[in-house]
Amino acid sequence: MSDTLIVAGPCSAETEEQVFRTAELLADMGVEYYRAGIWKPRTSPNSFDGVGSIGLPWLQRVRKSLGLRVGTEVAKYEHIVSVAEAEMDFVWLGARTVTNPFAVQEIADAFAKCRVSMPVFVKNPVIPDIALWIGAIERLWRAGITQIVAVHRGFYMNDSIYRNSPQWQVPIEFKRRMPYVKLLCDPSHIAGDSALVETIIRQASKLGFDGLMVEVHNDPQQALSDKQQQITPLQLKRILGRVRFGYNDDNTERLSVFRAQIDELDRSLIDIIVRRMRLSDEIGEYKRDNDIAVFQPARYEELLDNIAVYAMQKNLNPDFAKQLVELIHQESINRQL
Image (cartoon, rainbow, N blue to C red; front, side, top):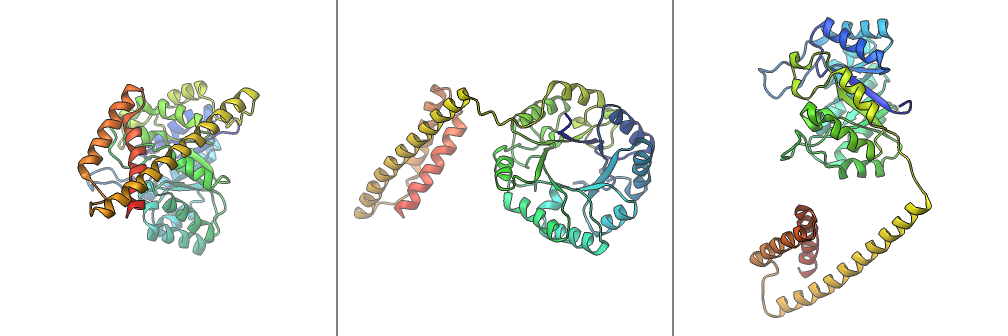
């Protein structure tokens, strides 16, 4: 666990006692970064929106008494001024803030004007837009912030299991584009349910994430915000005892054989798609010669239905199969236009 970055703490700082007690329990298990929101960008004005700047001295006490690095979420210029005066050790930008380039730029300008440099954790935007995520990081870089950590917290999408869909392909692509930026997983906001947090942590560990930003409360049932997704320090300790982080690039001979087979199959897939596109081109010529519309809705629906049934017969996820065919069909349409 020594190379794994764990940022933990309650969703919200509610009372000084709650903040300190949670911090004590986390410090005892070796957590070094302590998070607690004091300004909460809530959907409803009737929801608990944080204690505000009076919570900063509570975090200062945690740092002084327990030696933890402390931080909170920031969303506007005034927040940067306050955390700078309180000498917070780090801050994070929430998903809603990152979605708005104007808000990110305001924060970047505040850092530059206040001449403050500290680690900044940047959550993904609420939509799966990698360019928007990277753009937020670049704005902070230009403001002189050099210590930046990305945090994957899922996306607002229809999902039958999780609060926010993980869409793992997005952080995987982010890591490919920005391999030098540490990437953490926020299992609390993805799961939305404390019973599912460990599942998300396990998946993140298998995908090479560098650690976690997780919501931990000394008494989740009494929490004033997001109590359903917060776990206790003891639960976190047990999970971390069962899950191992740390990317291991295994290049054993047996794995090399598997990879060679995968590469060969991938080339075969491309060959099949090329053949399909050639046939699609012939169909396109026939449609042009006979004044037939390129897009045939009934045929398209039939194609998707058939492929879903066939995928299930082959024990393949039908939704995946349909998405694959949708991409191929769209390329066929583009070639026929």
